[in-house]
Image (cartoon, rainbow, N blue to C red; front, side):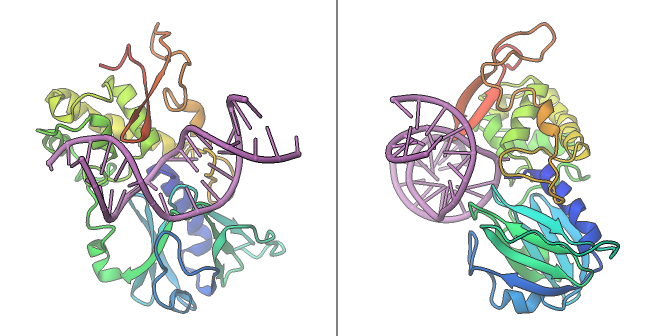
Length: 283
DNA sequence: CTGAAATCCTGGAAGC
DNA sequence: TGCTTCCAGGATTTCA
């Protein structure tokens, strides 16, 4: 799925056409994605103004003037395509509907946001804004990696005593929210830590160093506009380009980027997920 | 507790 | 231009 940087890129792309605008009509083309949509979702969205668009981990949260918040998860293949012309300068041209266009938001400013998700691992729900953090999907999340709560002391303590491989620990959304397979691989490469190393076996200083590395990796990806793999498009439909910067992800057999290191990047499977790493640089 | 596997889906790419 | 197999950014649930 889109990981934190991709979701943040999508959120930013949606702000101009959604924030402050009214959902004139919500078109819901099927009863569910990963889970059933909430009761009367279209009606509850219709006529509501979007007060703000927030992000928590890989979730986009749209606070509405009804006191409800629309939660959106893009799953693995979800996209939000923006069309139309919010500023009214040009003709409102919308693309023809495509297969897997599951939910369409027609805004009162002429913009149209189409949620397209072939694999349907995505999700939408409506929750009370005031108690949003108590939502089943949000209450289990660990700290935001770019927030103040995510500190060196926090991560050192969170990894202490863990017997699980560091790869799995960083993928655990309850320890740190928002990392996915790509950025965990990239983070461990930069940190020089072998993905199979037990989380609790990492020296405090190395665990602490992960904090800055994680932040750097995510910030660079956000600045680059999110990565773009098979299914991901920026909110405006343009491709991101962080994929050009991957050191290890999807580079099996290719030479390591490390200084003077030409070792072939290796791919292994951990918990059913591909892990890419340099056996020379990561210990 | 850990962790592996199955599960929800479709589509693209690779292999034959 | 076919058919089969494998693989994919996630995350929950089930099972050992």
